[in-house]
Image 1 (cartoon, helix red, strand yellow):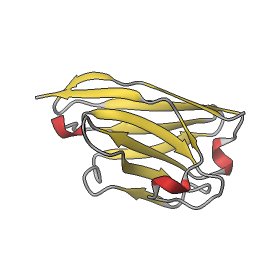
Image 2 (image 1 turned 180 degrees about the horizontal axis):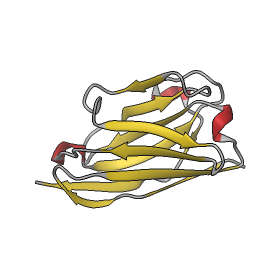
Image 3 (image 1 turned 180 degrees about the vertical axis):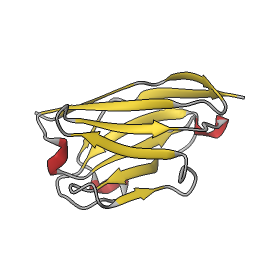
Image 4 (image 1 turned 45 degrees about the vertical axis):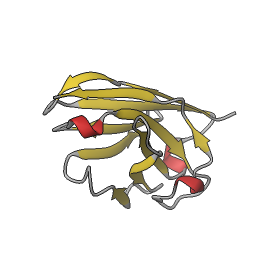
Length: 124
């Protein structure tokens, strides 16, 4: 059974940083493409970042490019999202997700497994 558990969310002031973690069990993160999505209040869930199995191919939403970095620690079987220069519009519940194949993707429908989410709140 695949389980993805996010952590690291919280309240931060604009301009601050947070690092989200996604610990995986029942699945080796280095064997599949992984991604981060977020859902703000009253909005649909949207793509944030993704990483291919090889870690060579990474995609980012335009709104976070240059501020967020997706990475993983194979030894810890954990996916990360480093978020710098946070803005109030980054406030959302952040979800990690795993595909069943190796290619990086921006498409929510192409991810099979999801975590429960972690809240990130950025104050102005």
